[in-house]
View 1 (cartoon, one colour):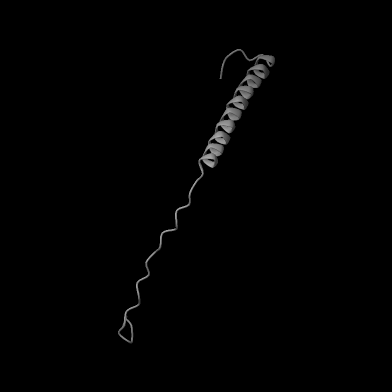
View 2 (cartoon, rainbow, N blue to C red):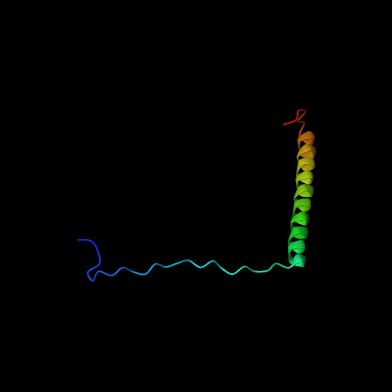
Amino acid sequence: MCGNLFGSSSPKVEKVAPAPTAVQSNEAQAVGDQIKQDNKRRRAMQGADQMRSVLTDTAQGKQTLG
């Protein structure tokens, strides 16, 4: 005995899309600049780590790469 005892159906609920928000061009530019700076810093740190690895390996007498 599944069903509604009173014979009426429940109302359908429709989802409402959120209102779009405007993005200022200077905000988007600031985010893009921050991402560029982060990537540049990450590449510089990666190069420093590789150089440190090479220097410590040669100081320990390692002659091959890898």
